[in-house]
Image (cartoon, rainbow over all chains, first blue to last red):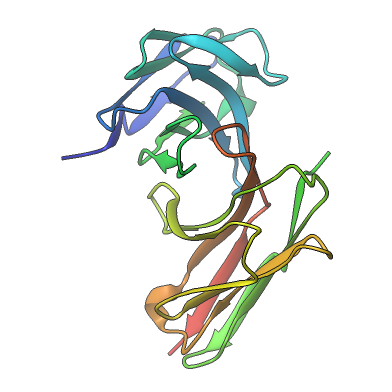
Amino acid sequence: DTAVSQTPKYLVTQMGNDKSIKCEQNLGHDTMYWYKQDSKKFLKIMFSYNNKELIINETVPNRFSPKSPDKAHLNLHINSLELGDSAVYFCASTLRGGFGELFFGEGSRLTVL
Amino acid sequence: QQQVKQSPQSLIVQKGGIPIINCAYENTAFDYFPWYQQFPGKGPALLIAIRPDVSEKKEGRFTISFNKSAKQFSLHIMDSQPGDSATYFCAASETGNQFYFGTGTSLTVIP
């Protein structure tokens, strides 16, 4: 039973399109994150939600809009996709104030042509 | 500003060797230092973690050494195997808050 699941695993789209990535966790965690991993493997935090409230919003273009309908779900919508948005996007979750382990999904590879 | 600095960027060792990956941090409020292992096409997975009240932690062939005064910690992989070939990330956080990751080390273990 997958702890943090992301869909879709692969996305190939044209510049200018809009796309969404969904994430769900069944660990009972209250904090979820979106990370972007570029071709150099660097993990850059984008957003974090705690109990559906945005708590971290790094310098990310406002074309990226996260949404957390409940504490088990965190979705990422990207408008007007650009070539530089091509990356692997990882969802992660943790229990705030707990032992601190961060669980990652398997990633969603976005390719913008 | 990179909160956690990691080196080397890549490492190649022979099977049975002991690769060492180093990380340094500045924020003394960090109280949790995990290492993550990532295989191609997969998400990072927790390998081993340490809190600053101990100087060393071992789990199987993996050991974290922690130097609080120097604000440095390192991962040692004993008797490395080809299956250990992966990208390794150190990280630091205040428990339950934002995680700061190092830039990653690509490890290749040659049979």
